Amino acid sequence: MARELYELAGSDPQRRFSPYCWRSRMALAHKGLEADCVPWRFTEGQAIAFSGQDKVPVLVDGDHVVADSWAIAEYLEDRYPEAPSLFNGARQPVRFINAWADTVLNLHLARMIVSDIPQWLDESHRTYFRASREARFGMALEQVTQGREARLPEFRAALQPLRVILRAQPFLGGAAPDYGDYAVFGSFQWARCVSSFPLLEASDAVHAWRERMLDLFGGLARHVPHGAP
Amino acid sequence: MARELYELAGSDPQRRFSPYCWRSRMALAHKGLEADCVPWRFTEGQAIAFSGQDKVPVLVDGDHVVADSWAIAEYLEDRYPEAPSLFNGARQPVRFINAWADTVLNLHLARMIVSDIPQWLDESHRTYFRASREARFGMALEQVTQGREARLPEFRAALQPLRVILRAQPFLGGAAPDYGDYAVFGSFQWARCVSSFPLLEASDAVHAWRERMLDLFGGLARHVPHGAP
Image 1 (tube, chains in turn purple, red):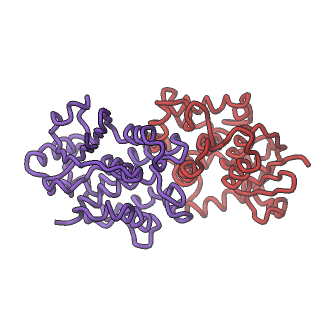
Image 2 (cartoon, rainbow over the protein chains, first blue to last red):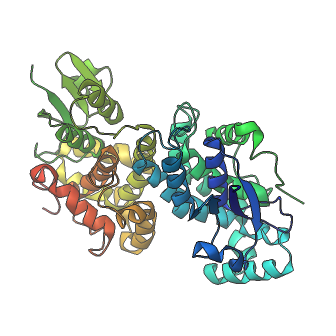
Image 3 (spheres, each protein chain N blue to C red):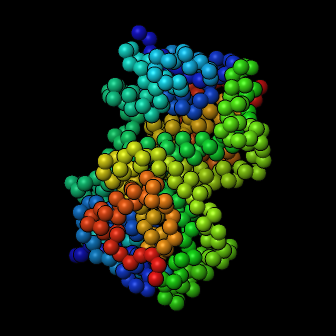
């Protein structure tokens, strides 16, 4: 049975823009595991009902069905212990990096790029996306990102914990990337796949790190539809 | 030769209020290592000149002299590998927690409690502290903390990465604390030792964690001078 990863996609099935799905995609590559992508759109809950919930990523690996990016990372680590470790021995502190990306980084990024997303969706998913996200933010998506240029210093300041480490070493995981890198990179890749808004200065250690992440696994994350129309 | 830890103290030598020194104090306890405290005050650079720099903590362990809390943690881990591990195998992701505490948590806490510090210092150190910190913030310390009650929601929101994890498990390290816990706890203990301003709601998972941290090692951090006069 082929391995499959259900990933959020836009009207172009090659445009993948979920931070969580990118974590799983990178984790699979780190482990050297192939997986077919199954493009999935908002409102297609029925297509992943077999997973017992309604969000992607969902990994189908033979008889195993795993939802949630963190659960997928733990599953891959336990199921394929002979493949390169995602955690280099300790999962707990990587969990903090993952939680920081979930709660801090993704919120900052949403305020920068969420209004750039609808253009990549077909009409029915665009309507769903706008309604659900505008309810969450309590305002129009264009209002959420309004004045984003002026908020760049605040956004970049929030990246300081990353910067401190990435000035001293190439990856959060040290000399080589680990799941902490993928957890954070997923967020930046989400932004890159839907928006051309320049988030990072070229002189920023975080920028250089993102370039290194884009180069991993033969440019897996670089060579995908991204940016402006 | 006795082991010694140079720690920042107030006019009362028992009042220790450096987040970084508390990290080292807890790390020593975790390793089961005794160390005499040498109280050190701002402007006493001469007393630690032997360390080649002018900040505490400084650990003197036989012939070894180590400055900087992260370097002390790595030194203790390498020098005493048979004692309980501070990192459970992986230092890199703990470094991110450490960097988050340094850059995000300490700045948030300073904005909450920095004006409560001068009362604990004798006059010459009070003058130094006020002048150096007011230069850093560009305003009087009382202005820095002004309106802190109104800023509590923002402060507490910044703790969300901790909360996500501490709702699911007792320590950042999992079932037991590790250096990630001490890195973050040092900041809260700094605040507790100089201020009675209530930072956390009693129902917060971070509050319950702080209580657990205060209970560690026979109440090492609990039974010290703290709070209001």
